[in-house]
Image (cartoon, rainbow, N blue to C red; front, side, top):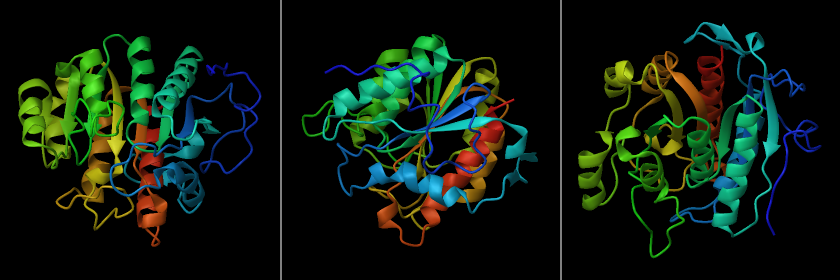
Length: 295
């Protein structure tokens, strides 16, 4: 059965569950729309990222609405929390299609999509929609992993293939990868030859490419495992050697100068981190993204 909806259908503007801190109840006035993508159908190690969107919303209530990094307050902007997209359990291809359809409607409504994952494959649906809305799209990818495989154990729809799908769609020369420290030898070689590839670090190599991105539409896809697991252990495929929070907030401030037309944060698995530090960090990143990318 195909899935379709319009943004004026009841479940979207009338969502009344847990919402991200400070969210408006007025969809029409919202500059940005937060939406959840609760999927972990293709994870390759520890599952549970389908629980990420709900828990990120819940812990956001412990945040201040003011960002001292950006000197802005959530009360200065309008954003709507649409809840989670209903996804068919165990069907990654149809799930990604539903996400694509959903986000395409958000672009038609003139909203900035802010997605909560979910495993990283969910980003493929959102980025496809962004590429249709903005044919000159660039993608910034923050991650521990290259995600450049054509398939994973014979499966082309996998969280290990998402950025390769993006490269094949918009062109690898439009993809900027930061913080990468895990992948096959072949993936690293392919990235060095084809994408804008800056392994191990984020903030400073990102700052160096700002001039070439400043007049382009940019989509940012952020895997929580770009962080060192000492900071964010609650993710399915944690990799040591990652960045720490101060570098992340510096990178967000750098990106605030860009024309960011879409953002997602993925791979938070809350049941793995009973201390909640991963979820709290994720919520803070969403706060900063809302403030950085809305006028």
